[in-house]
Length: 180
Image (cartoon, rainbow, N blue to C red; front, top):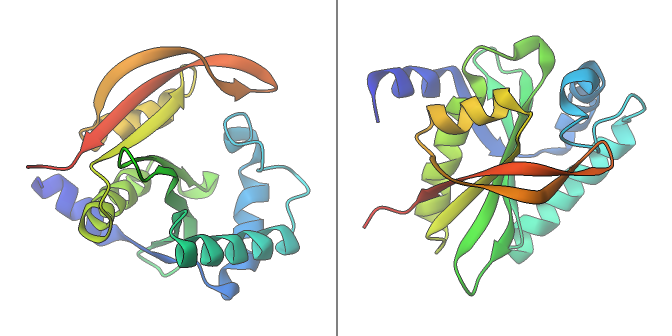
């Protein structure tokens, strides 16, 4: 890990979602609709505290059964900054999807790369996964930049891999693999 990566890690922490995150998560989602909703349709102008509370319960259940490991991203001031997680876990082949988002008011500050680096370390220390994949719509340049900043390998461009605004879109596939 480079000095700049260590400095980024000091700015944020990741932790399992807590019931108390629901209110701030709903505020963060509503503030971020313009930037996040094209890539993550769950983020919409009517995203409520009840929606966020349901998400927190989903993450708790997913952690309990090992189907997903999602985390709240907390900034240096102790505020909710976004979320990240490992999901779509394939136990047989030992790989999963890694996703992330940061609220608009905190974007561009290195929060996403710092959180993703922590999530990658957590994943390889706490699961048997050998590979995590970051799948990013070709037009989502900011998310691609995060993948590149954390050292993910650009593997391919996949046709019709993700849905963007209800239409199939190409996506860039990045990967990070467990070291030997």
